[in-house]
Figure 1 (cartoon, one colour):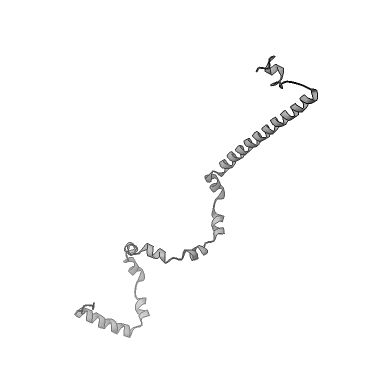
Figure 2 (tube, rainbow, N blue to C red):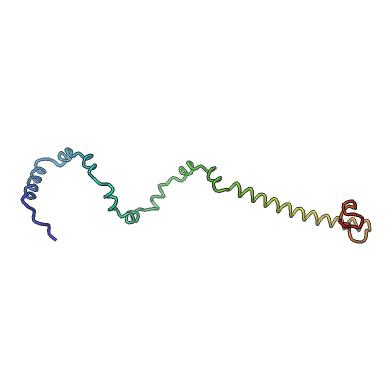
Length: 147
């Protein structure tokens, strides 16, 4: 598709522009341009609407970007105490410790009961006792052995 033929005004403007560029260096012309006023006329939202973000992200090298991240510096700014509290780690540790202590006591109690029976059986043989062992002291159990 060929551009339309310029009108008279277009031909005059082209001729004048060509003569100005030939007569004056481009740098001097650009010094006369008010860049701030020009940028004030730019509609940034309109430009951003034209940006294809997915295409832009496809061009980003994520590995290279992550190589530039200083993890130690990031962690130095992190409030680890607040993160630990927020995650509930002290509660988890306390609950786990309590459960572990309870299970350890249960195991120790069962071992003591087993040891008590072994020692009781040994003492009964040593004293030549016969019959079932009493359930407990006579004052607690009663005369007939019933609680």
